[in-house]
Amino acid sequence: MKLTLAFHGSRGDVQPGIALGVELEKRGHDVVLAVPPNMVEFASRSGLDARPCGVDTAQLLASPVVQRDMNSRNPIRRLAAITEMTVGGGRLARRQLLTYTEDSAAIIGGSVGQESALDVADLRGVPYVPVHFCPVRRNGSVSILPLPRWSPPWMHRAGWTALDRILRLASRRADNRLRRELGLAPMSTSIAVGLARSGVTEIQAYDVELFPGLDSEWGSRRPLTGFLGPDEATRRAMDNGREPLPEDLRAWLRSGPAPVYVGFGSMSVPGGPATVDTIVSAVRRAGRRVVIAGGWADIGSRESADVVTIGSVDHTALFPLCEAVVHHGGAGSTAAGLRAGRPTLVCHVGADQPMWGRRVVAAGVGAAVPASGITDTRLDAALTVVLDPRIRDTATTLATRLVPAADAVDRCADLVDHATAHTPRLRVT
Image (tube, one colour):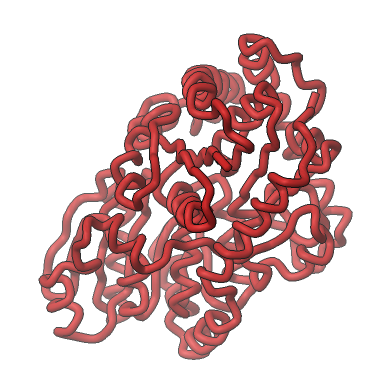
């Protein structure tokens, strides 16, 4: 059976799709993996048929439309930015997916760029199976807003309903313009409502330990699998067969106590290198060494006896060798830190990251501060929590309760197999 997987975004969004695609190929499926053009080479090393889809996400995140317009306080400018990204990247992604999905039995896609995958599945008349890396649908178990823990379920649901309506208002005109270009009828409701009415299984690729109660609330309609991750052979292949950590880094790690990791992945940090300097200084004040990982944004380079700067790195290999981790709170980075049993300080920038920060705090395994509000005082207080031995013990215990990556991938593939065989033709208008 031919299956087309579409996973857009950064490495943290694409890598789970690679893990799922490899497992589906092992089961005999013919898999095409559509990813951003800047991720094609990386994804192809897994052995999958990876093809470019949509825009280069590294260039997009560094562009004025994201750096300036998406962060504007002017709602009209933000709305215009959303429309520009939706139409520009969406039109290209839909055109490419139409080419890749000829004879496909189903389309499986991540949350980023779900509109393109859904529209092409609608046009092709094949099942669409969403795979989400954090909660994005209405529920009473976890809030999208920073509400008190005692907040009743109806308040959580109200927040999700408001978010769904805001997103619908922001993108409706652009989304329906692209649907009309494909010859599809405009959608009269949001994607969330449309998928729920269609009876589509929406796979939740994250761990119930971080979201207690969500599995029982959603049941089989939105099953939780655990965090997805590639097996060791695939991980090594994606790193071109190299050792996951270079020898000079391993030597530095052996030369002293476990450091604190600092990295922001694909995100541009508010304040840039100056903000990273503030974080590094706070870690050094706490008497810890620091390993800084560069990402897509320029955060500068720092070298001293107790500080080392490296490029992109395999979190699975590095995090277990660290005392704690400081990052932006992306789903992939958060999962890697929790699997390693390491306390986490989330310095969130936007999107789902504040939610992950709140989940880290609620689980008792770390702290969270907004990257835009970092001060010496806030960092010192947060690091006092993160470096507390009791937090370390809690993080170690939590790691033992998480669904192993291999089991999560297997469960996700089972759900894809079942959904493609039993989901009716998609109709979401």
